[in-house]
Structure formats: structure tokens, C-alpha cells
Image 1 (cartoon, helix red, strand yellow):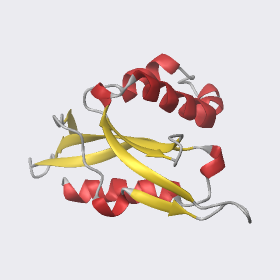
Image 2 (cartoon, one colour; image 1 turned 180 degrees about the vertical axis):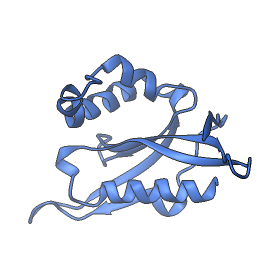
Image 3 (cartoon, rainbow, N blue to C red; image 1 turned 135 degrees about the horizontal axis):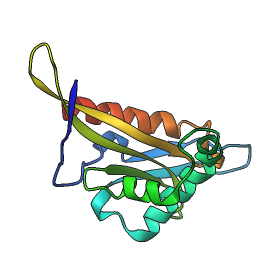
Image 4 (cartoon, rainbow, N blue to C red; image 1 turned 180 degrees about the horizontal axis):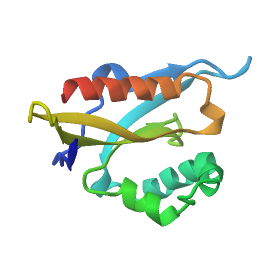
Length: 153
């Protein structure tokens, strides 16, 4: 399989059904959390958001990276997230806090049997803040990824 990067020149719109999500309270007496999604091209990611995405990924994954041969690197994640072919769907809470995101790219693959080029969506990261885990946000983000893969196939 030969892989080529597909560069889309604009952001990928979040499907209308997925733009807002109401999450049930995590404990009795708490209010539900309304989460909104927005799409950002990697090459256009604002510095503050880039730092937030790296910090969330570090909080969730740095220990696992450090046990691997890759080792954690803020600089490597920043390059990956801000790459021109990267796309990021960001999930923010009612007060603007980053609750999660997924980072993806479209790749063009040539089928060696048919010699046809096919587009595939690869999710490079899917991160959810610890306090939002187990409430369905990750499942929702993955459903958005699946929907985008089908739409842009």
C-alpha cells in the first residue's frame, strides 16, 4: 500500500447533528454539561488552543509514551497538531474549557490490486479530559469521525 497525504484547503464542517451535545450530570445535584464542537485546520490552530491540546494529551498520555521507545515530546505533538494536513475537532464546555478533541488527517492510499486511489480518514488522537471521561463525549467524537469518513469517502 502506498500512502499519500491529502490536503484539504478548508476546515471540515462538523455535521449539524453533532455540533451540540448535552451530557448528563456526573453526580446528583450537578447540572448537565452542554458541549459544543468546532472544526479547525491544523495550520490555522491558535497558539492558546495548540497549548491546550498538547497539555490535555500530555495529561492523558505522557506516562504511556515514556514507557515506549517514542518518549513524550511537546514539540513533536505541536508539529503534528499544527501540520497543514491536520484537522482538529474541538469539544468545549459552556465556559469555554477544553473537554476533548480529536486530531485527524485524510490519507490517499493506492490499492495495489486495483491501482485505484482511495481516501481514508485516520484519527491520530482522540483525547477527553479526565473529568469528562465515561460520560459519552469520546463516543460522540468517534461518531463524528465515522460520519466525516463516510461523507468524504
